[in-house]
Length: 100
Image (tube, rainbow, N blue to C red; front, side):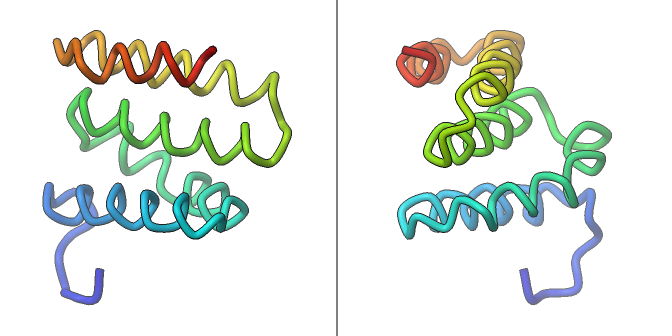
């Protein structure tokens, strides 16, 4: 994220996903939520459906871990829908598991 790439650059988008995975494993759920608010428009406008699914899934997991279950479920459902649109059956299954 320290390189001067445009926000819509695919490498930049993947970097945000990797960062959110690191934050999840570090239990920094609040930071993921703040990043989601800042980056939502960029992902909606420039990411493919798989990246959108990953973005929403990680945000939903952060909300779930913070105890915001109702909001988490709607976000995780959106993530699952993006995975479905991308045709990625494996991640659709992971998203279903996260909804359980």
